[in-house]
Image (tube, rainbow, N blue to C red; front, side, top):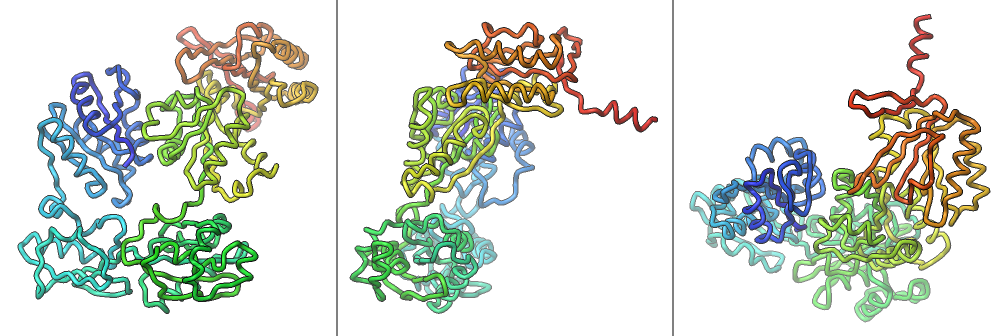
Length: 601
């Protein structure tokens, strides 16, 4: 479970909220207009709650249950995927798990009740009586017929007993609280085989490992069909499969991941040295495979490595045109996180302007999921409220290559990594460098990492939205930094933008050593548009010390800017419109007025 967010809406809940946060190792979130001193503040309660829920964060709200229900109702779809949501009265007397009872909410509610001296209102009857829920078995177990769980639990709550038949011989101690009787009319069958029953509850332990190998870009449908055929031949249920396993050289093969998605299990990978240790147990060792991969068997070796020394083959290698499959069974539950390693994942995350409200829900979910964060120290500091339990890898400004290499190395080890940038990571930030380093030919396993680019709100978008709509028509973005781009190339782009009458967003307008470039940029743009052209200057947007000014192109001055500034220079059509409060709006019309005039004519 990720760190719970303890949400309070007023100062009267502050003391109890802090006690709850201490009890559950949570993070205190407060409604900014009324509460101060919280780790995280927000101004839109419903939006903040939905963001937390979408990111999978457990939510403890010291507020009316209706506040949580109304905010989260649009997001409710699958109870199996819902994080815990708990409503706590401000006096701490009543603690009600609203969602995610079987995913930790009930246990969390009991901890809060103990800390506050209140009562946890556990409404899931089975868990209240027996401490378990048959319709939501623990990790490593799947239901073959979920519809039978509710009727069986109803019978148990009515005083009946159940017979437990463990055909799989896998430890099922979690069922021990249930009242049992050998000749009971209701049964729980623990089996690895595909079965059907309207009355018996079928439980499948995840004790089966499917080892696979394939040629590069082998057809996904072929491997899926082969695996299904192998399961049928072995007489095994797909619900008993714990993981799909292979050699790490296959970590990026689409067919392997397609099979894992098809079976709804993780894909895990071993290096050749680990698979080579299984050679004495292989049914079909191959010298040819050894010459190509460094181990004598991929599918068989991976299956045996996954089930461990006490596991056994139930089906040696079977072949299709371009893929292979083997199946092994363990005498105990296989926990995929303890098997091999996952395909590494690198999320390139754009943080937006810096505030929590400016991050997308997708970016926040990626940050919550990642165990390692890599970035410029300032950017990591902006995320400090979310960083509990994360491994932080902070770098100095200017160490861009070092930080991207480090992020790729971590992901190549099978870790889930977030590489963070301010604004949008694909706009003058880290995303392009990731792919450049891969193309340069660094570590071979970098290319096998799963890479996800997650957009953020760029500085020019924030400045434009706060100023009005200066980017309402065609625009371009130009960085004035000549550290990586020769100044003559930048100058040509400025002239082209001036000639084409684009609105121009200037990034990196000045630095401590570099002032003249902005002066020259102003000269070039003044050659094509008037001195009164509106200019928007934003600094520290979305952060403490934010400022936004509307000036003219003639008065644009390098002395008032720095690297935290962004400059939007209007086109010849850009307008400056006085606001009733004394400020100005800036917008660039798209031509709707001309369109209306043409229609009238």
